[in-house]
Amino acid sequence: MRAILEHCAEMDALAARTYQRMSERCPDVDVACEFGELADEESGHVAWWRELLAAWDQGLVPDVVNDTEGLQGHIEALHDELASAVPASVEGMSAQQMLAAAARMEFFMLDPTFGELLDLTEPGSVRRRRREYAGHVEHVVELIERNLSDDPLAGFLARVLKRAWSDNLRLAAYASRDVLTGLYNRRGLMNHMRQWTAWSSRYGRALAVLLVDVDDFKRVNDTYGHAAGDRTLKAVAEGLREAVRESDLVARYGGDEFAVLAPETDMVVLSALVSRIVQRTREVRVPLEGREPLTVTVSVGGAVTTAGPLLSAASAPDGLLAAADRSLYDAKRRGKDRGGELYLAPPSSGIAS
Image (cartoon, rainbow, N blue to C red; front, side):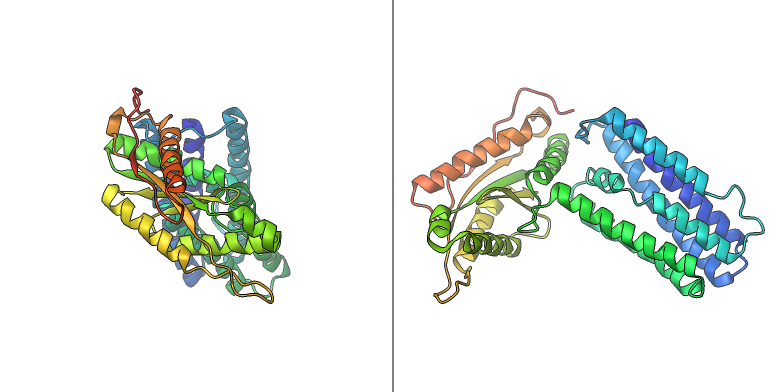
């Protein structure tokens, strides 16, 4: 895994050096300035990978790659392709030639693997870094379109970059997002849980998880049809987004069950979050053709861990989810439309790694 992260850092470092050379040799002053900005952006990307490498060395990054050897081979091949796309020298190149080289170079940097790996970075920063990288791609495309508007090939390359970026985002979404609700799916949730629990374990920070179950959902499907059931799930998902904090992660855990991963959340904060979710769901109105809108309720179970270094990073997700499931059962047993007794997830005997 470390070799994979090192290759990622080397690729962005190569791009940063190339843009810097272009900024120093480009005959067009305005384009040269833009190349300098792109070099700075790529240097920022290198810093991300270096931070991730440091976190890996400290045992803060879980190894969630199933085929490490295959992924390493893929990244090495990308590195070689990128190196072949980078001009050996930019001396004497025109601004147009440099822009064409930039388009070729960026094409190899849009592989969806990079986005998957960035999801392992410091919890809470993933969205910001994805936005920043999207801004970098848009910067390159706009620079090409603005300066090579009369060149059909350059315009084609810019469109290829746009298409590659949007396609890769879509592929990443298919892997980690639920198609119906747009929330993270179970796979996306577990990847983030591994990272957050590693962080919590290392620094002893509170971390909570909630399981949210739509009450009597089978009755909705049986009475109103599956289309109404789908609308119900989408409405509940939207209500959850509105009820949680920006730092919380919401996922569709499976069927009519959702999960919320809440960092920096102790028992007091978690109890308030449960109340907001229950109340916000009561306000949900699901439109029905020719009928009054449907109202729904949820049962919520939750658990918190603050076990610090005594908590095993490997077993922490399962322990948290099991405790939250017991809490959810308690809410159901007590009549639904409420939260259950919140649990403090017990530490395991393992050591975080």
